[in-house]
Amino acid sequence: MIVDTHNDLLTELAFRHREPTPFSTYWRDQLRDGGVALQVCPIYPAPEHSPEGTLRNALHQVNAFHRAVRESQGSIVSVTRRADLMNLDPETRLGMMLSMEGVEPLGSDPELIELFWQLGVRLVALTWNTRNYFADGAGEPGDGGLGRLGDELVERLVGLGAILDVAHASRRTFYGLIEAAGDTLVICSHGGCRAVHETSRNLDDEQLKVLAERGGVMGLMAHPLAVDSDRPTLERYIDHIEHAVSVMGIDHVGIGADFIRQVATSGAIPDPGRALLPPGVSLADAIENFEGPRGYPALTEGLERRGYSKDEQLAILGGNFLRVFATALPA
Image 1 (cartoon, one colour):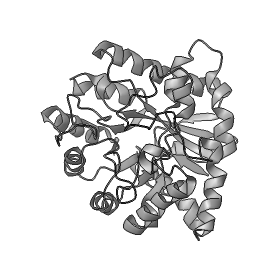
Image 2 (cartoon, helix red, strand yellow):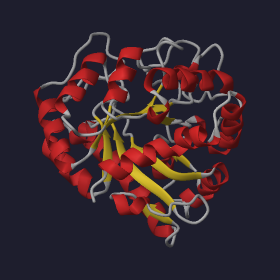
Image 3 (cartoon, helix red, strand yellow):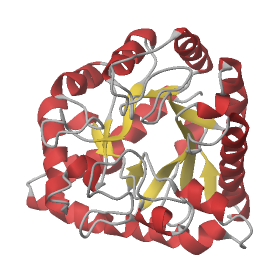
């Protein structure tokens, strides 16, 4: 049973909003075939939109999420509380959770996060790669962190009971979130290990250790940007899993695949080559033999080849994130 903490499918569903049943047409069978029982779905409005356009884009994605749940006739549940995690099953009861990949839709008003909470958001990353009113992202050339508004937003998120996400955070934002979060759960929904592949999108060993010490889980990202742009293979992806396990322990490693090829090539993203990627890397690139959810059986086989026991495989593939969500979500 797979728990994947990052798939930008809402961007495609919002783009296809005039089509009948876009989720069941383009994604449901993929997730079922891959054994996905819980899929976290980020709201990602492209930062270059105007503030009004960003908010409108975000709400279209929220609407696409709830439309998918509504049209499923009970086979999909919107996960907003602990009880929603019960009896998840890839075949009959898919869990979907709303998250935010950057809080640009809030503009400069932290109070608006309460609206997104009411709409079902339970996991929040303050930044994408760029700077916003609240914090600096991983793609900024300097090392800015949380601003005054960022501190206020984190305080509101903690009060709501949201799970905090350090994916895409600058180094100072990462540590600012850790300090401001108190006992609130902090995870990394999707990223890699900088010791395996050097990029600002990956976490170094010190950050991995801090995340584990706080009870968090690292979701390993299956995109060449994070894995290795020169060797974009499944084995190299498993190298990141092995390194994270060696630094954090088996109980703190999970999957945040970020399967983006289909979304990037669907027309939903006008320029798949942007997104602050290094030369020669496209957003539409993918890991060989691991381009989408149907690749999860190959990952399971790869973990078995590396000597992971059945229990260890279950922990990495979904058990660890299920455990922390069952603790962190509202009762």
